[in-house]
Length: 384
Image (cartoon, rainbow, N blue to C red; front, side, top):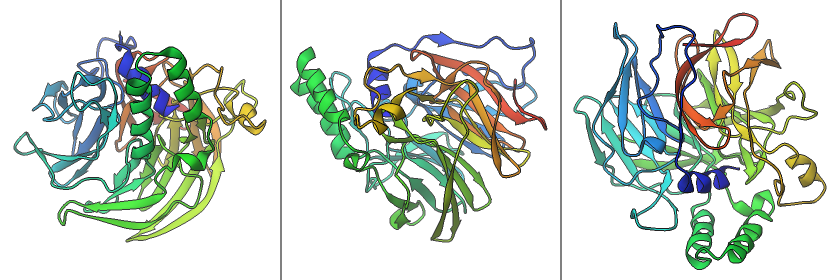
């Protein structure tokens, strides 16, 4: 579950893990540091990425360079943060929300409501004089028109901040009290977490937020997002901590008019009886084929939830996934395997596939691996 994953990320030191390349020459060099829960954006042929387990570091990879290498840029100017959103508009990249500590010595985590912009031309950061009107941690963010940034979903800041205040400060390392806080937090219905149902739009030029509609389905956080024209697909995500959605939401946006189509469930992975859903997945297109890959879930959570257990993942093992799915001719199929089970990395859409940058591996370690998910006509393969 996304919230518990963030808690674990704050307590564990990520190990360095890199998947061996198929040959000495690679199209995509590995990331400079073990990387998960970060942010990334594409501008022209340049990929910008950082934050998360990279701390304040910010890097660029020029795909048009004869010898491709990640280059260090100006550090992020505020506290490190996990799961921030980065969206490029013009020659600036806007970084929203994320979670971390206000001071390095703090015990508890908070959701940030700040917005920063990175000026590509000047390699400089500045704080934007605004704040997110709703909790946007774990939201799906994108721009369709190069002017307005849209947000789908997000964790409720009051509830999330309250949970970590109670867990780290009130309980203060008292295991029975911490268990009581966790049980109370997880033993709730999906609607009780008050995830952000409003679809928000932010215009950087006007520095203005707008509420342009509502998610008509169960609200999800930590979804994979894929965009083609004015069509958006939101893949999986959590409908409550520990319980994933098996659905892919389909959205059409024209100006500020939003049309929600009927969600479609992904098929079970090979060997699974049902599709448990995935959070922290990679998503995008390759040769007009919609792809979803990786992420994590708790096998058995839906069975316990449907039996009336609100703490749906209690006693279950979080499992990172290596499954790849593809929508071919309107039908979802199981279309391959990742090199290793992973999720919660960053990814960007390229012309011929989805570029995966880092990710979290089974047990929480971070990966340096960078590869392209590409449809080859029969299945999806990882290209380095």
